[in-house]
Length: 376
Image (cartoon, rainbow, N blue to C red; front, side, top):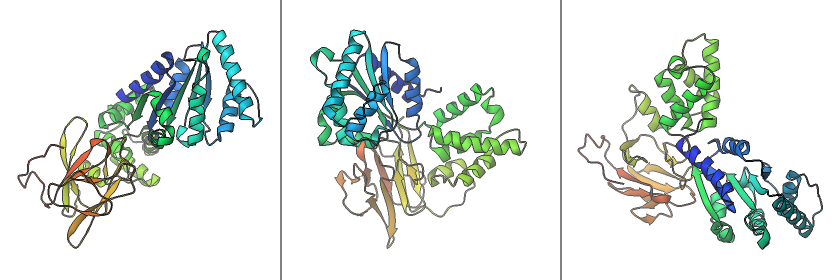
């Protein structure tokens, strides 16, 4: 298993939460970032004095949820009387405490649970005084899970959750390390098997989502084997992506290929990454989408950004930014926009979590125009 710093922290958070007998641990992340893989690792690492209910099917009513948990504990009951089901669970918990055991309920795909089911889990963790601290619940799910937990209806659950983490996709360096690790386990060395540009292109197409890396590389490696090629090169990656019907964000493509001919940019955006490095991104096609998805024109890797958060479009020779029904809203110069907003030079486009972009209206590159980078 390859553990990025984020994944290592998430694994430690889950195991610490269970060891410390926290009521709730919440780990969120986009599809394919490795949440289920982490959970499987936790299941392997748990000591024998922990009894486990591991749920993966979560489109359940509160009553069905209780029935499913009982089934995981080898107790069959299909009665729909919630009082009866809760009594069965309480008796089971008491027996586990007498036996010196701890109870862990691990739920994957938790974003599919209803708010009523999540509230049922909270009540389940609030056992009688003599059972306090016995039951720990770990929820793993997509970003929608965070939105539900942060809703006013689940405020009590939110207050009882001391450990929460959102996992982002791998960055460019981690993606290369992940590929190297997978190939090492398989008995190979990345430098002998993949060209440097092919590795860069894998990141461009997948934006560091491990599941997408696996899918793309499996197809590309198979194609290279059929071609009897000594190395996987750019053509193998591009052909595999074409078969999968994947597209690379335009801004990423330009960083990979020096000879790409593009029309004159309509403007520029100043972006600052997590290491405080600044780069200017050209707005070279319209509409220019901003968001967390790998298919956007500019991917913004932040948990408070929606998959397609906002977009920039133009008419009558001007550029306008508009929110795309995002969860946390889009702001220009600190004010939330409700409809399209005309952009002017040095406008600050803001999103949830403090992430900001600065707009530059001229067509020439900011460096050529003598414009200094403005701190975000």
